[in-house]
Every structure is written in structure tokens, then in C-alpha cells.
Image: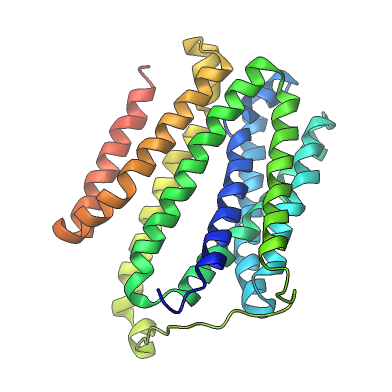
Length: 296
């Protein structure tokens, strides 16, 4: 870690955590807010899908932008520009403008993910990458838990609108932290890698690489398809089970904190037992858990 600027590394992770915190404040209450203003569950599903399409564009373009011009610009976009889009939810009730807001919010909020991971990949030595990525993931899972808890309690004690105000404020604070940390860095300054992992490009292009890679992509796609049902958990919890908004936040917080607690131990266990075996076990447990929601 002697080649790494620890102050910059901690700041990048903190800015990323604040961006995730801003999004997570809205996670438990956004479906509830939209249904409260007359959006049907079917339209809600389309809106959330629109945001995901935006995130595909935003994360890929954010990574390309970071490669071309540096870390500062895409992360500034992913923090400062989130605030007005989040606030737009409070003042918009029409369906078509909401679709546009979801799409733009998806693009903007995803702009921080690729550059943050790219910074770790470029600046951290190979021997420390796995440990740092585990710490990074744990950091973000903790932020998700804190955000979900905060969002639920704020909605119960004040109103849905205050969640949007708070989420916007957290996003702006993340941007200010970025500016303060990288105040001497130029806006257009690509990151230079301190460690290079050599790859046999002939192997990468070969069919022996493409087949397992395509299979892993298919598994990931199916996993996220199944996990998308969690977007409707707030509606299940409030309309079927009868929980309060604050209790919905506690549900999401519990999930995020369990995730944070298990990330590093599961990584070590995967190294010992084999990643394939542990992934199969994890997918099975996840499937059982999702099926169990139907009987809650």
C-alpha cells in the first residue's frame, strides 16, 4: 500500500458511500411515494426499469469518461447533478415526466460507480486489490443499511418529501467532499495505473475464455432478474403485511447489514472451498429466501 495515496483512497470510498447513502434513503420509500400519488404497480415497474437502462448508460459512460479525462468530472456529475433530479420527484406528478426523471437519474447516479472501482484497480497494487475491494463493498453495504433506516424513519416522522430533500443534501455533500479532497487536481487528468496485470490477449479472445464468461453473464442476469422483485418489497410489507414505513426501512437495513457482515468472511470461505461451490450455495439460499417472501 506504499504506492497508494491513502487520503485520496479513503476520500473516493467516502464519496462513493455518500452517493450510495443518498440513493438508499429513497430505496424503501420510493415505491410507496409513487403509489401514494397514483402510480400503479405496473407503471412503477416500468419506471424502475427505465432507471436501470439509464444506469447501464451511466456506469459505462462514467468509466469511459474517467479513462479519458480523469476521476473528478464523472464523480462530480454523479453527486452534484443527482440533487436537482432527486428534488424533481417532489414537484412532478405526471407519468411521462417521471419516466424522464427516472432515466436521467439512472444515468447520473451511476456515473460514480465505474470511476471509483477504476481508481482502486489503477492505484492499488495487485497484492492488495482483493482486500480493498472487500472493504469497499462492505463500506457500501453499510451505507445502504444506514440510508434505508434513515429513509423509513424520516418518511414516518416527517413526510416523503423530506426524504428527497435529505437525499439531495447528502449527494451535494459528497460532491463537496470530492472538491475539497481533489482541489489541486485538474478536472481533466486521467488516472495512471501503478500496477499492471498482464493478460494473454490471445487467451482473452479465445473460445475457452468466451464460454465461461458468457455463462457467468447469464447467471448474473438471472440473479438480478430475480432480485428485482425486491423493488416491490415495500408494497408487500405495507399493503399486505401491514408494516409502517419505518419498519420497511428496518427490513432493508437488516438485509444490507447482513450483507456487510458476510462479505469478507464469504470471500475468504470462497478462497478455501472454491468460488463455484459457494456461488451455487449462495444462489440456492437466495432463491429460498425470495420464495419465502411469498409466504410472509
